[in-house]
Length: 307
Image (cartoon, rainbow, N blue to C red; front, side, top):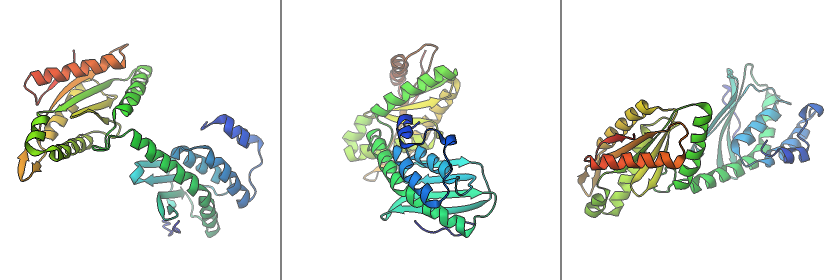
């Protein structure tokens, strides 16, 4: 843990929490010493393997000793970025590590400067965070690996099934639109035959990266199988999905892929389906799939909208 430079830059389980004595916060005396709070954190933070919950617990608990308006955290390789509380001018940022393993950067902010004593207390409390946070990040990586396609770094079929079911339920509950784009790389077998499977793998990675670059952060890309991808557009009606699909189609055409000095012409075919009232996952996927095959029959390098 690197000391700060002043810029100052420097429900998991309710039953379990109750057994450990954290259920009725209002009835408990506030810690009166740094040692007591560190002991409390040592127990409390080990009740979860969710990094966001651990950091939220930590943020809540430390304010019993050092008033903090904001806690910010980022760990780029885990794709994790959090900001809790209200924005404030004065900050103290720490680069976290455990046994030389980088654990991200954590920033405390508030409206008045931190005293040297307060910074020393925060640094001492951070020691209680490192081990639980490390375990949570390892768990996050394991979960992400199980749900990601290793070649394209998109979601796999397992992730797709989990996410689509959840998003459809949310769309129904909140009366929000939801659309799917199912797309296929045109003449992919020819690419493999003419340029080799390694070139085909590079094409898959390039197309996946281009799709993600053209989408919002809330949109999700999954490798549906082989050269097929699925794009989930939450909160997007039919007209908006049509615009997104056309943008994706053009972005793939603009890709400049070369294999052994020879350019590879790329295009995709797309099928688009928007969730209808009372529709389930299988029906939505089936309509998107039929629209995709209609695009292929129409000559490829185009998009068809499901009826």
